[in-house]
Amino acid sequence: MEMEILHSVYGDKKRRIDTATEAGRQEAAVLLNRLMAQGAAVILQRGKKAYKVKGYDPVSDLLTVQVGPTKQVTTSGRRSKTTVVAPSAGG
Amino acid sequence: MTTRETETPDVETMMATLGYSKQARQRVREEVALSEALREAIQACASRMQAGEALSWEELRQRLTEVAEAHGYPMGIPMPDMDLAEQFISANLTPLGAVMQHNQQQLHTEMAGQAEKQGLRVRNSWTRLGDEEVVVVEEASSGQSASMRVPMAGVRLRKLLDTAMVRTKLMNLTAEAELRAMDALKEKISAQQWKSYVLNGMFPESSKRSGVFYFFRKGFPTLAASFSDRYPGGHILAALCLHPFGYYAGTFCGSMTPTDEVIAHLLLMRADEHGFWKKSGQWSATDGRSGL
Image 1 (cartoon, rainbow over the protein chains, first blue to last red):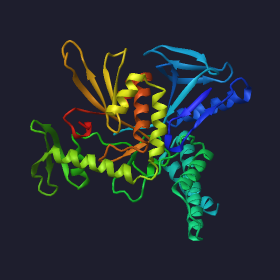
Image 2: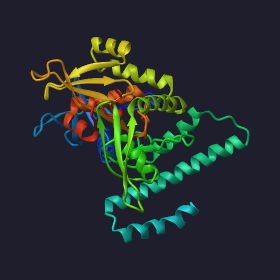
Image 3: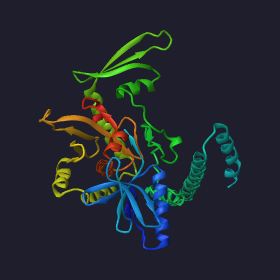
């Protein structure tokens, strides 16, 4: 899984986590859960399309993403590229 | 360490008295530990400088980023510039938000907010034709009210200049960071959109879900427009103002570089359009905060 943390001030903050290993899947789960608990939006990109990540299962290595108002689907964590957007304030 | 041992029981007692939930308590404990680590890091940097060592802003920022990451904040933490008069307003859940200010008051007009800061009680406020804002304030002792008419042209210019000044003064917003952000944006948009962004400072993208056209602008709120049969020439629905981490009050300046904010707007619109609207400040085109 590739995670890009949006913050160009800090430079390149891309993280590649190998979710083929048990340790990698646990690391990805801890990081994603922590980021989402901190109010960040984790966004999965497929070309020009983007989906909001709702959860990650380290056992099956599947990301759950929102594809419609009530519809969620799962996708492989291993081939996923996500961007993390910090909690935002309306100005 | 001694400080932490003496201060923690006070915080714990306070949280117990206020009936904090288990999660909230854990969050406060983490933020207390983070603030202490930041204080130690800043003191260490100050001591090095007192000893005659030259320390750049880049090194200081790097050190603070390391502290944030070590404490489980991989996104980093916003460090407001202490020299600026503009107040930093942080997003909900941003670490150390209590020492800044969470949330903004969604007042009718921006001038109403400034009147409240001066201690006046605002009864009502609105914009009117002729590019003016009207604020009705109440005198505390007598209860008498008075209205203020504010021409917006000067306010817009002031806001523009304040934004430029704050961005220029902020040490963490560098030209290199902006160029890195532009490289990141280029990967996410089409060649035509990229050309428009470089040449015009803005690019359009429509939402297939809602049919709304968005104009993402560098350094300004995103414009949401409708080109329906009813408005074939286009109609601005709202100017959507949203800043990751937070922003400086009274300006368009956020804590991240302008193009980073454009990426945040674009991805949130593509992934969660409803959420993007929900979190944004939604200003009418006539409002000074729309950046028009």
